[in-house]
Image 1: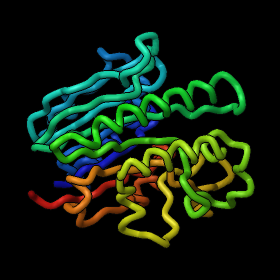
Image 2: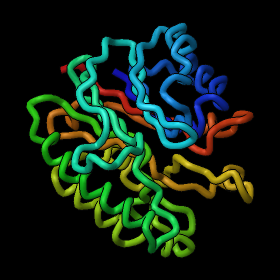
Image 3: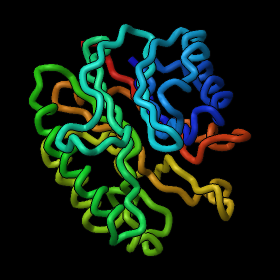
Length: 257
């Protein structure tokens, strides 16, 4: 089964790019982030025309996550537990083909320090709590999406320029490593332990052309799924398409039981 994650940076504006990538890459499951569209503006017909079912949690102008699947989708959780007052659309869970798929869009947190960074760390703490519950489930689990964190210096072009950024501050990286300490496997880093791999390139200063990127889109696998990991990568060329997202799709392949 091929599972992908892709921050589309506005599903209405990027729909031709999304559909082109879905046809070319043909993932069985695709987790999308940053839809930037209200619930009623999700392009379901176009998605279904390519053979996908979908669930989504939209939000006007901001955020928004979706899970597309060639298999049946059983929605499990909508919204990250732990704060009933948090109305931002950033989290979905669904059972698909025997795997619990968790799609997230973790807050950016800039400027840091400040209220947005506090929200990021609070959201991260809730994720750590939820992940602990998920890890021990008797089913394979993957938590994937845009984590807005570069875990190590290998994951960021010129790390010295990012020391004060919310995506690279010590508190953010510590939270990610606290998550890993529960036992989760960082799938892309497992496959490519020493390789420079990026999933995001800013629109400014020819970042893509210079390969001045960041690795912020991740797959975390629990102990029941990690042994089934057989392949993975980044569809970097998609970042070079016209009117594309500033992220590239990332994917893994897992074997059958």
